[in-house]
Image: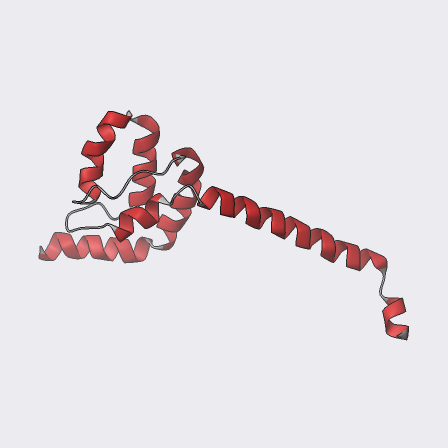
Length: 119
């Protein structure tokens, strides 16, 4: 009991403050992540010959700068089925897709290089 009284109030307040900041950041990332991740979509629908290196970033940039009627033509490069669609908010998804594409770059580049050399 005597140790509990020696804990300064400021350290407890800091812990609560940082906990709240972490919760707000987590909620914001969850909200932004719910609009669809272009990287996850393009990698999960990848077929032979489809773009793999920075594919989510490429899809976001195309969705930002091109019109909706051109998207169907561009999406055929990524998958043979029409299941994949660009994210609802590609501008919000672009930094997250770039980060995830950068993380999986060694994997996607090796797969793309294998396709070029052996197929």
